[in-house]
Image (cartoon, rainbow, N blue to C red; front, top):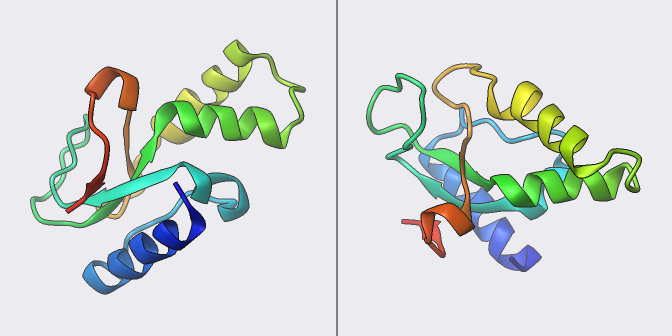
Length: 110
């Protein structure tokens, strides 16, 4: 996704839910942002209607590997992501994750 579209998503999310959380460090994870949603389909027991960021799982893992210049093999990067990022609940503003390959969707910015 191009940086201009990412900025548009971030601006829209800030308007809809200023309390929405973004993955840090932003320099790594903003490139994995693929949309926003108020109908997160994840394992968390969310109150309906909270707008949150949507990140692509595979892009997050790829970005981790790029950041650490392949210091981690894919399995280690994936384990780190699923344990420390994907599996962390920090309240209603917690981002959600999708897999474009598994879910077959293209853009979640409605």
